[in-house]
Amino acid sequence: MSALIAEDELVPEADLVRLEGIGTLDCVRWSLDLLPTRRGEPLCRRGGRMVGCVLLGPGAKPSRFSGTFRRRVFWLLPHDRDTGPEGLYAAGVPAEAVGPRTPAPGGKGCRTGRSQGGPPSSAMREPGVALPL
View 1 (tube, one colour):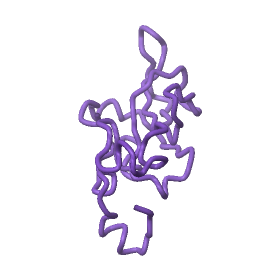
View 2 (view 1 turned 90 degrees about the horizontal axis):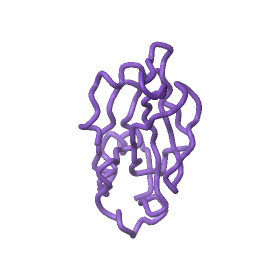
View 3 (view 1 turned 180 degrees about the vertical axis):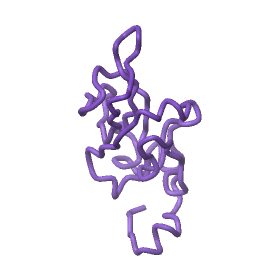
């Protein structure tokens, strides 16, 4: 899904807030939601849990039609790999998933070998970061 977002839509992003630790997560889903405010924690309306969101800067403009702001939110569903490692996503990830460490304010996230079900990358192994598979 990150291919579907234009870089100029990310310009007003000021900060990325993680609402829970991402140390054990292999991937997170993301979406662009229409929210009533630039900042603050949005509600998760997907039957899962919200793991992060972006905050917009003061220059972010609301929609002329609805008055809402387009903000990225990061979330997981109950059947995702973190709670069902042998389930539907034991290998591979949903289309809207990215590696949890890759998103940044104003920058798209991307898939990683770990988010696809593979082993941690050499960048993670070198500093001795041990994550469960």
